[in-house]
Length: 384
Ligand SMILES: *Cc1c(COP(=O)(O)O)cnc(C)c1O
Image 1 (cartoon, protein in one colour):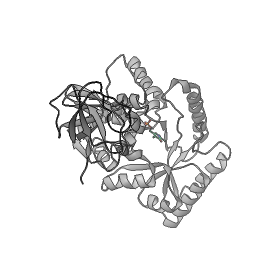
Image 2 (image 1 turned 90 degrees about the vertical axis):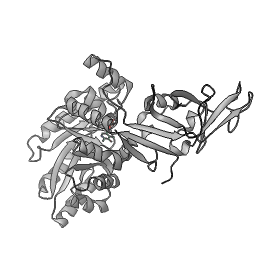
Image 3 (image 1 turned 30 degrees about the vertical axis):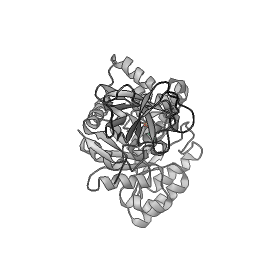
Image 4 (image 1 turned 180 degrees about the vertical axis):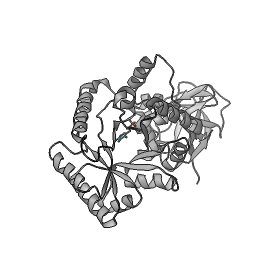
């Protein structure tokens, strides 16, 4: 209720990004909006209804809890929700009851899904995940014939919605060989499954990177996370996109801004240390602004003497160490800054922009990590 900072989500940016993705993949491919990690920090409850409004009908999450959260924000709508990761056997009944789709990648889950579906007399909606080389989850080749047989024998309790795998790092050309091997292995599986009665299931293997870079790997559905929030997964993928499209314009728009207000200002003499310890020494009479944001809000301590913020249309340095709940900024160059002025930690103000990416350069955090660390209880406000 009472908050020291707030997050704004731009609805027009959401629309821009969703339109871009739909145009890029074309009509025949389903866009599944990956909203794990509280929609990459944007807030499931805030983001999903807007995505729905602009045409998204398929959402992917990691866990049953996240699937519940997505369903709760879109209770009366017609959308698919797919769990790509963890669901406990005790949660299967809930999932089947509510038409929640889930990955099956090991025999225990498959057997439980069949048993629960039988008991409920309702089909479980499953995606069969295959191991192709990431060596995380997925049925390995060994034992696969028995798994397929079990599925085939229980099609009155199972609807196979998808056949899928995950690529181990399509965002970097350094992984090229590994990714190509995975794509080939998946192709071989597809050939094997061609004659099964459930081969109409959607094939899906691509996240943002593969969707952009290996366009023929889009198959029937793509699972896109970071791109929908306005970020290319890596600089390399952006450069690749630009080269291919012969453009230098970033077609995506950042959705999220993070803002707070100046809580106090003060003047400090030359030759004084700011905050804890001795990491920042003033070399002139300095004006300092205190901002009620610290590492407990996800503003990394490694941004001590490194971070930048925007106030009054100008860009200012974080000085001294980032505290648990507070940080200090050197505002000597703009004496007009006062208590209550808006501070932008991520986003734009006037002509200036602090993107999450530039922020990440300072802190060595990638976009994914920085965004998902934004606390769930910071209020999210939808703007135009
Ligand atoms: C997170 C995730 C994605 C989305 O990845 P992005 O790089 O954010 O597009 C796709 N598939 C799976 C299995 C994931 O866990």
